[in-house]
Amino acid sequence: MAVHVLGRGSSNAVVAALLVFLALGLVTFASCQTVESGPRDPQTALVTKGREIFFNETFAGNGRTCGTCHRAEENFALSPAFIATLPADDPLFVAETNPALAENFENPVLMREFALILENQDGFDDLANNFNMRGVPHTLALRTSIDSAQGPRTGWSGDGAPGDGSLRSFATGAVIQHFPKTTARIPGIDFRLPNDEELDALEAFQLSLGRQNELALPLALKGVVASRGQEIFLDNTLGKCNACHFNAGANGDPNIFGADAGNLNFDTGVEDLPDQPADLTGERVPPDDGLGTPGDNTFNTPPLVEAADTGPFFHNNSVETIEGAVAFYNGDAFNTSPAGELLAGATGSGINLDGTQVVAVAAFLRVINALENIRGALAFLDEGKRLRGKPARQRLELALAETEDAIAVLASGGLHPDAVRHLTEAERLTEKAAGSFFFRVRLIRRAIKEQQKARAELADVS
Image (cartoon, helix red, strand yellow):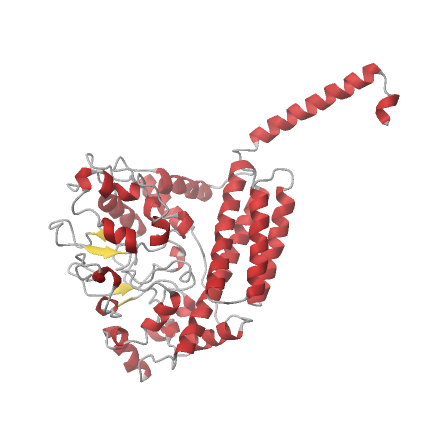
């Protein structure tokens, strides 16, 4: 061995060199834990600031943040299954832990069982009677889904609250509604209002989430059921879905509603569904009148690309599965609603899909959701490859969440088992990468290849 030909002095020199190398390595390793590589532009810095505010700023209120209800782990939404995992002292449950909020602030029964949040959409004059129970809408793809000819459409009813309906006004309304220490809601005592800089940052962060562009349908899908579902979705004489969800987004078809129509409000009859889960509990659930004060019973159109992994569905979480959400449009509640009658008048008939067609449309929605999950996972993996330390691990955790969603969305519909196999391997590699220092980049590259293989099983898309 080489060590036998070295003198004592040479051996000491080698040891000293190794110690210096290890010391430098440890310094470098420590420095990698918190520093992102490369300069950041002002917009990136604003988004980063917005992320910090969204998840950590309580605005001197009851302990809630924006992220208390819009959970990153839940695609910035909230479900009963996730609520069941939370500890009793989570800020979501302040109505159960703060005596000043025990009445007329939340309904713990409906929150825990159906993820419904109490909203005083039409003002705070009569807290005991003037309220709605609504689900938590996800905040993905807002850049593509909130513009309309009538102005911004935010929240389930599209009007935000209070003010002009913009994301900035919606954030202010959220603090007043959900963050107070008491139901008196006195600014400066029960909470502080966000300032302009904070509103700018929150807006930038929310607009950065999810897709930044619309799909261009049709896609070259490979599964026969999902492909048939896409055909039905786009057929204005059969599924008629594309009329209001153009390219599976949140905007009306410009060929029908005009080039600048954007996001639209409709009365689809969801409020008239029989046997709504919240009503079956015996808890008081006043009718939700939608847009305006008083309301006109309309609600804005949500994007569908992200639908399959962001249920329950509709503003009142009345339907649990994506198949059930598609089937709703076959029923009397929709076809006798103002929106259903408008559609029938324009196309000659209502919507009447058979069971296999409902499943096909749902399969299409599941596949495009999984493709969006894969797109997001690949972006996070690429960032995780370029960054170091904590920022890299955070990106890998986000990639892992997207991968898990894609697996669940496909497997729950019995779709594309080969894609699920590749995604499961990508999940394993991403988990290993998140815990590795020396082999992180190599593992990420392998995970990226598995994601790409999964995508190739679903569609011919880049």
